[in-house]
Length: 603
Image 1 (cartoon, rainbow, N blue to C red):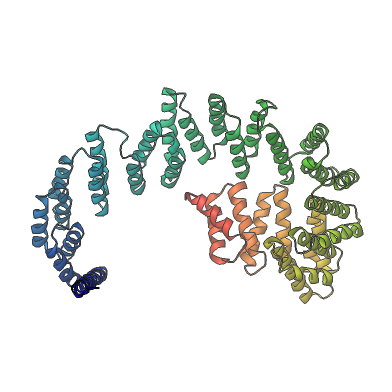
Image 2 (image 1 turned 120 degrees about the horizontal axis):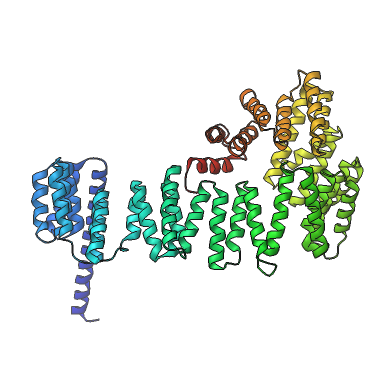
């Protein structure tokens, strides 16, 4: 390499290093100025910002930093001087001048200056957005809205800036304007529907808000009955207020106009079940069935309706006559589709009805034994059938047969949730039989179960045994409690309650009083004696705050108030109490979700 070239390379390298060092120093100085500003040391930040601004007066960033620092120091004359110069370049700097007037308390002059900025806006969407963002960044949300609305007129486009306006209206909780803008947007962009629902849900706070929305929607549907987007939104509005039947009417209308395959109604029915709106869910499934066997959701709806009725039986909301009708429906389904791996759900449900609600344990046993021997049955399903059958053996006073089945499942599915469930049920069987030491040994192993529910149940029962035997080594009171627990399993609520009453009378020093109250409350809830259940749960919360059932009682009490007693304020209070006092509770996540929903948060 020749000498002159080497000298040139060295000079260029030195220049590059110098520029890099200079650039790095500038970054460090700006960071230091920002820290001074954030710490309220405005005089220190001003010296740095002033230096940068004077070296590059055209740079917007340096101008804004210098200008805002001048305002903080109330140096209004210098701030007005530099903003006036920039105002000659571009009218958008009127926003800064107006901000200065606001700082000085000259509101009228500020508004006049802001209006002047809007009057001089160009017919350019990008420029209008920039000016609106400048208003927004200074916290002037009203003028940001006014800017977008003025921009619409300039561009002669009534749909321009819809999303920006929706965000601003939601931020300011201007519900009427938000509602109008959302409906305006849906006219030309139906795909915005999901976002529209989210924005409204996050802003609306009272029933009156939804009432206004429904009124506007009904008028729009009347003018444009083919607009399915508005029908969908109206159904959603009814759903938010738990007006399920009215929501269903709208969705059926939507289904008919769009000639839908029933998907929307099927999904809606599932939402209804989550909200315990069983009667309306059943109507939704019934409507889908009227569409005929060739529709995609026919079989799914038929199955779902049977499962819905079955759940109502479990919840104790069906009469004996309805239980018998449901059994007949399951038998007809099995006759139509046969007993095979695909209809196991029906076999299990029918066996449960016969055993627990029809005292036909022999028929239930035969159903399950036959199902277990079906060819090509999934091993997991076969194991679940064995657990069902073992429970029926317990009803028939065949504990050894039940223990044998539990043992088989536990052996074949070791370290698997089904195997752990079998082990827990076997330990519970020993508990029923009064073999508390062996039951506790098995429960202590299950406290490390991979299934949180099984681990929690095992821990609760283990502590129950331990605490009572520490007070009463004979275990007589515990035997009565176990007997009552078995009676409620056998669906003999009156006998279970009577046994529990005898326990408290015979053993007034027992440590089982909180356990008795919890078991009673479970029985009363199933019998729909909600007020009595509430009294029992309230007693646990008040008198036994350190009980293993304290968080369970609070959660059950909150759900009872919300779903059955319709006292939403009381429900919120109990959910909040659970979150505050029992942060490690298994119910914490669900309690938080339910509390936020009752408070009106968008989930």
